[in-house]
Length: 362
Image 1 (cartoon, rainbow, N blue to C red):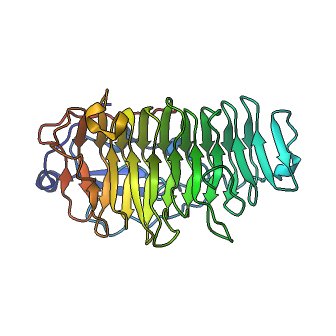
Image 2 (cartoon, one colour):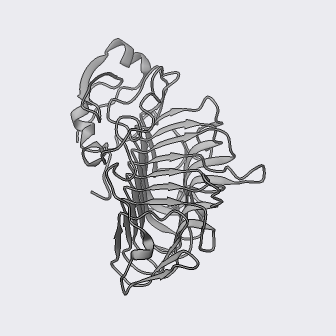
């Protein structure tokens, strides 16, 4: 994809471009592009909307009234995420696979064999742990009334597990008496979460610790309300603590925070990564940070590209932690065209490279 960026909001005002596309319901939507040369058709290759589930859009009016918004389709605003509305969810007690242990008395599920896919279950009231490789959870519903694992998580991957995939699902950690500290906690290498609605955690929404290796891919999700556990809480939308991760990709998500005590996406201890196309709104400290192994940005072995994020930090300390940011001293951190939706200000390196959005899990 070819994209050309302008260097200031003034340039966008003087050279507006009107573009038209279809929202998730098929209605025509007219949007003003804020950067010349980028079109809806180009961004549609990456925004996730072509593979979105059919369900009710969660926050269709979220971006109304902002001075500027992205022209692509936004998760949870222009298209729905979570399990499809017509899914007939099944009772986990009916699972009968040699690779899956079902403890009906304690309402717990443990996946012990590799390459298991569980599709279309209502896991409300059940704890879920995988100790295996290549577990996939899709088109399902989860809550936090019976969390498990060492971090009291709705979904937990043990150190022996790898390549956990969560897609097209809804995970609510606190509603209805839930008390989950984490929504998804992975101790093994490899984690992908996409097209899901993750909401309400006492502490972190997504945590990664344990063994080194693997990628983290978080894309096309709606995430809400981390760090809701009270005044001693230290929440995060993503926290990586301990292991070195090969690459961390956070793409085209919508994150909304009201109250609580939390940080945003803290992509520490990664060799490289990308944070792009996200909508970030609400009461966090800062929405992003990144570092290489040893929690040091100087140790990044590849680029960490932060670009084309749209944010409202009216009730936050700022977009990026001061340790890294536009024109910082680290050669591997690249900031390009990150837009304050309230003021129109663009935050980017004065002579930064032009990063290109990527899709890590097609």
